Amino acid sequence: MKNIKSKILKEIEKSKPAIIKFAQALIRAKSENPYVPGESRNINKPIEKQVAELIFSELKKCALKPKYVSALPNHANVVCPLKNKGKPVLILNGHMDTVASGSEKKWKYPPFSGKILKGKLYGRGAMDMKSSLAAMIFTLKILKKFAPVLKGNLIFTAVVDEEPGACSEIGTKYLLKQGLNADACIVAEPGTEKIRAGMKGYFRFKIIAKGKAISTGSGAWERKEKGENAVTKMAKILLALEKLKFENKKSIITPGTLIKGGTGINIVPDYCEATVDMRLMPGQTKIMVKKQILDCLEKTKQKSVQIQDLMFVPGVSISKNEKIVEILEKNAKLILGKKPKIALSPSSCDAHFFIKKNIPTICGFGPNGDNFHGANEFVYTNSIIDVCKIYTLTAFDFLK
Image: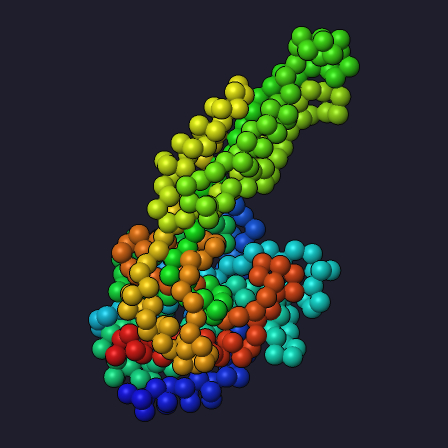
């Protein structure tokens, strides 16, 4: 087996230029997803189409059999198995959409140039997560040469609509509803410093406060006989939420991430709305958290206030003793020369869909870079190759 693994590493070394070139091609294919959850599937724009077609074509080159699986014609996921059958099954999962690139003036190089300079590959999606997609695709291509010695099967899934909050009905969740299943999964969110054996969840909600409008110059307002300021009412609520303490101290609440209110500079505002973002630890349920929030609102004694749920994604985790964690840790140490820490991801991804289906899932392990979701996002080219080696050796060990 050591001899085969040496051959695998040599194949990856030979493929280095092709892997980097393909990562560049993926970055140059725009797939910005600026929508809020639910919006993109209703608009049904071909956000990820160029990326999906590149991936499909690349997999076909080596006689693999990719297929499009879509809930909507303009949002096609790409699914590609290594073999027709085999147990155990490992899934490699990554998303094709990116956040918006923002103002090009803030970038050193155009965000879709795929420029390489001093070992850094620049562009929107370089770190999150087109370099991961390139590494996973070449993992599949290289392992095809060694498929006869593998007992199990590898399934690569490139999914749509992840960026709006890892809660889409048409990406990973849809594939699982269509029968996708496995014994383990790696979701290739970036970073090799830690193996993410879990992730924080989130609860996002909107608070609406209503008041009574009146001219700010009226005597009735001056005497406090009429009028009610919805904005100051909201301020009291947000300040109370900011002080809210949770049993798990690693839970974070950020009140007032977006605020709207008022109709004129000389009118007492009769309406104000504000959104709140909460980051939750595994085990914190929506019912549990919402009760604390409602109790807090009640203590402020502010009337004509309502709360609207926007999104909830649970925090999840798996044991550090899971087979996929141990194998990934071993191969990461082999390639990187040090053992990554086992930790929770501070942000959410599609991994929770797999874990809820009892599929042990790595919630993040991928190439290193910087400026995640920001201007001048980049990934280290040598890290793409290292991660391709780690994915390939991990898949080989898991499936042999």
